[in-house]
Length: 402
Image 1 (cartoon, helix red, strand yellow):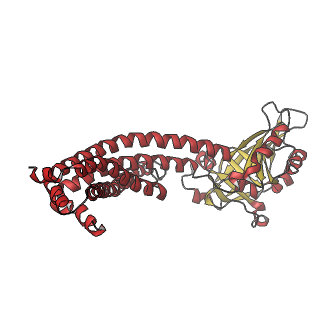
Image 2 (tube, rainbow, N blue to C red):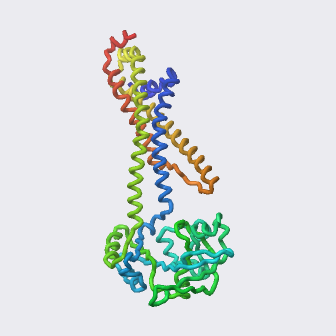
């Protein structure tokens, strides 16, 4: 039997039994749509958690902090030691002091931090308004400051853009040498807000490290970001740093662990969606079996006219694959439609209550392609048994079947 004949016969059910055919496709689509919706939710949650991570420098960075016992500290000499470790490209320290900040006539507690522009690049910090420090703008940023989102919340500033361009003043609590006490010191000038960082956990303000050191004596740093030259050298540099007595965390390890967790979540969600898909596949199998009984006489006629058993088998399998594939496409449309509707509704509720809109569902192209292919495979599997039965029919018995 020619390919065009098989194609014509395997799509004939759209004319002879259109209602049943489309209902079968819709049933398959509902099951597939459940998988697409639930797994899409898993991808969306993963993206929400990891969306702040900037690939590249961030994943090649190590976060170094002193141990709780303070047996070693991050002094300028120590930072130089870290620079000399093999495979280290750069080191970005962060100094921090408790302080009072005066903003728009209000005063609150904060942490005044000093950092070089590359520190933000290595930590993956993003700007929600304005800009962060860069090496190109370092000369003009000596009078600039970056506030965190948590800092704005302290002053009940809802729109970060309104804070750009305003000036702030600081009174810093400096440790007294040889004592555990601190003394208050007012910085000599005011700083202009040029950016708002995405950090929401700690109210802080950051100026350039050189500017901070020009007014205060920085004896040790709170933390240091080490930029490694290659991802394969992260473990080696991390081990060398730990041998110096410091605590080391790598964002790449955190991302790797988070990815594994979300893969597990996606697998669990896929199982729940797969239950609906199995039910749909059973319905499709039942439809193909009924179709076999209805077309028994037709099969007998085709066999007597010269069609082989393999031709009959290919015909039934082709029908099942077409129905399964179309069911997959319908399911993809249903899944994306349901996800979009739920996401829109939840974002409306979130924004009306002071939250922010997020993309709760995500559908990567490889995942969509897999679902379409998998649906065709499911159709193929459900069509094998009816196809074998049809191919095994005796032509004479099939003609006499009523």
